Image (cartoon, rainbow, N blue to C red; front, top):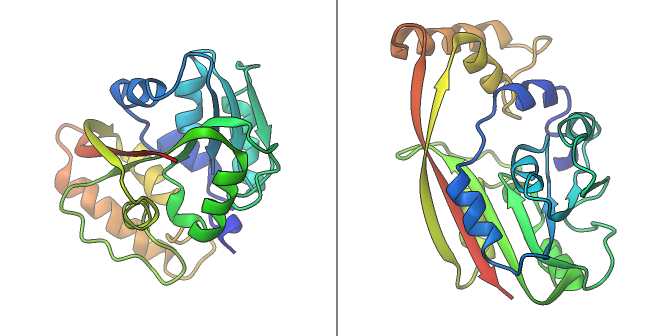
Length: 229
């Protein structure tokens, strides 16, 4: 099930997944009025939610996975302006017409797009925005597996007339952080899985090949799709 994709991976996700540039956060904040209400759907461990919450906005953080919810609660503990909800993209449990901006941070590829679209129209206020924000590596030839789309592919399918912005996102990895970031990917093996030792050896080989003085530098791009509905 899509809701179980990150079971056993939330701690690594919280420690090692890249965040998002301030300029991307400011762009999204500028879509609506200062007192807008936001919903971060598939909030994960709160990588994006935290950046938005620091500005004092009212936010609903929706997440269905128990492990991710635990880490999300830790991340958002300092922010009373955020309400954490155990829900899905297709059934958020939010009230009708309650949200100004609906955000998918690295999560849209996990949703049933038709069901999510229906839910957006239910919970969105008149003239609401939907936003998809995600990090990717330029030139990445990754082919998605059979059970989901990438965020990039899902965004191209979901939006009809989006405004698209991109921002540079430079990330530095130590060996430990690099291995944790790979461990946080839903499709990668866990320690008890067949193929785990080979996977770790391959990840170490990449770090050995690409690090400079113990740091591996990766130039990610943060892409933001936004559309008013």
